[in-house]
Image 1 (tube, helix red, strand yellow):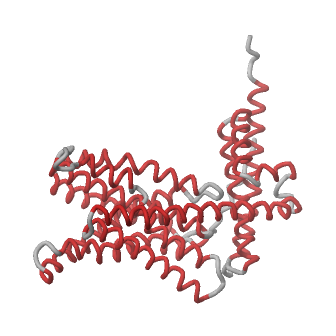
Image 2 (cartoon, helix red, strand yellow):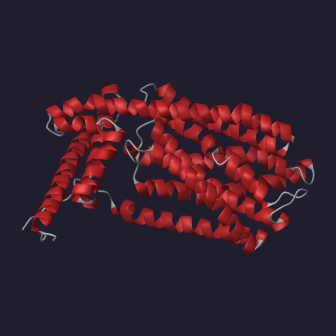
Image 3 (cartoon, one colour):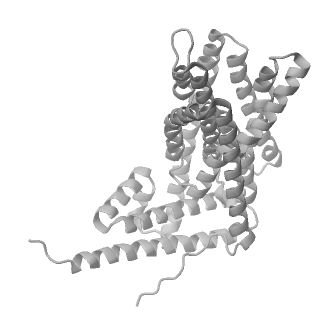
Length: 398
């Protein structure tokens, strides 16, 4: 009988209040926020308009989420955290923004006259508090799950998915309201189709772009030893997110069509392109970090020399998994994927140790990661061996 050892834990023993109570509390909180949003939106626009809003919001959110998952390929973040980031944006951040923005709108109507409160809310309170609510999730990851935050790419991914969830819920409301007021629309009264073009086609990345500034600031803070930068970089990221958000809302609320188009093409598009270039640079940097760490892992017999070239590129890794899946099945391919991810995580940790940007727990974490690499490799070998035995024992086909 084969007895396999349990997978080494990266985080040691975790108190049950963290493994049980907090997830349950988070689920209750998210569900409660979701129900509040559903009730408020349905009561305001009606059930049919709500369903139209949901259908319209689903179309742009898929490509946006897929783009962030594509970015997060070298060392994929835990799926549960990515899902939680989206849910936080879609539920908690949205409810928080709804309460604060409605209050700001009422105050604005009292101080500035009826009808001006929505302008105050759009240009001032929405950028300040919506970005704070979305950014709070990224801060939480950095504080309580520091080992899951390696740098700028992780910051962009967590912030972007949180913002994608926020935009998803917001789009449901805007599309539903447009349908309730103008239907599908015509030449004189733009309805849900025009709203979809503006929000779902031209600007699906606006909210993720704003909040990505916070993720970039957090990522810079993680990768430096300078205490001033650790404080100033997140603050600068938050301020950049607020300014971009305020500029976008002001152009849509206070400006003309030409103002909106100028802001879109002269500000938002260039910044979006710049962020894409930054992401590309950091992904190449991550590849270099992994490639430079592999020779030491070969010396430690954690990696076989023939695997170095495969591990040093995303294409090589993908081809390796495909070959294993074809030859030994999905279980072996999943084990290889876990091995590849563990190698990357160990490479990133050692890079941070060399730069002096880790805490006192780095040595313990490194030992655990080494054990995880060994365990994943052994699991991959066992899965391939079981597949080979199964093939050898299969009856010959005529």
